[in-house]
Length: 264
Ligand code: S5P
Image 1 (cartoon, rainbow, N blue to C red):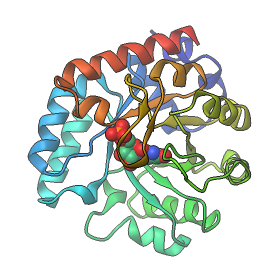
Image 2 (tube, rainbow, N blue to C red):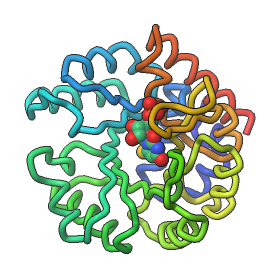
Image 3 (cartoon, rainbow, N blue to C red):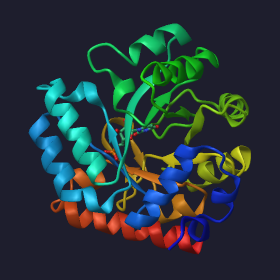
């Protein structure tokens, strides 16, 4: 199916090339799933990617979780992700001033060289986005920032006022790919979509076929409802990598999310 037909208003309204790329990948894979690859060794990362790569559209990493991280293997891992037609999303949650965030995209992990997307909190002001974009320019690459507008964890400090300030600033910024919303609550996603309009992505963690409370304050909502409420991508970690059969689980999340998009 053509991305234009599947995504309708989101396709028409999106101006960022990276958003169009994601929508096309999602159509090729018939999946709105971003895998949260929260594993702790390079071998585990390769095994997980090899088993679920065909059912996902994006790969979210926490590069600093990996105990035996090394540059050579990481580059190979990113090349495998690219061969599997995936966007690579480092969930670094940058929050410092612009010039430091720019430099934090370098350093030992050199995130600017391999990430297509990163997360940031807007708590320090809008320059964090400019800093991250400057870093991708330094690497002669393009990328997009997902701003944390809501969170899935209980007791988080992202109040409705804070959310609307983030959305107002992010909506107008060409370096902002979209927003992270609280997938554990369909009403929150719906409210966020109303604020955001149709021009930017909303990606939602806190999603699991088994809804309810997760570990250490995490909360889970239903993947189908999250997409129906306006989420463009469900971020799923333990629902896939913690399942007895990760490949089957990933395929199930893909099917649910794709069906919901077509119904939406
Ligand atoms: O509000 C948030 C934002 C993010 S990016 N809540 C989250 O859980 N996340 C991330 O999504 C978190 O860092 C983790 O990698 C993933 C959720 O994993 P799961 O195992 O709970 O599905």
